[in-house]
Image (cartoon, rainbow, N blue to C red; front, side, top):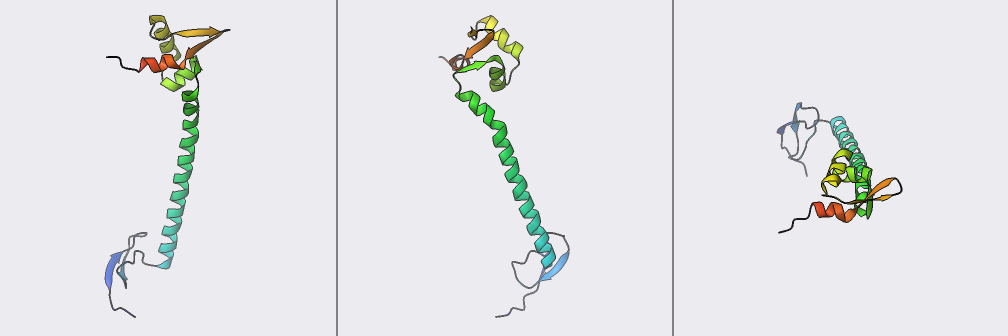
Length: 119
């Protein structure tokens, strides 16, 4: 079954005008179709790589959320604030901390309490 349809189109890859013989043709030639396919494959690989990178970046934060006791450095990472800010909050009594040897340890519930709203 042949068709005598001739539709003027613009190639989705190179942007040149061409005459298509079907209503679904997107590319002017086989080369443009192959090049567009390679671009799509490359973009999907880059997107998958970016998702994997984001997963690796967010993993330490998820591990910190699971811990019951945090060091000052861990609390800084979790809250996104500086060490000095944490020490100021401890001085004002907004957050309680304990000592384990030379290390200052903050209980996770203290951080959660900062963000809980009481009516």
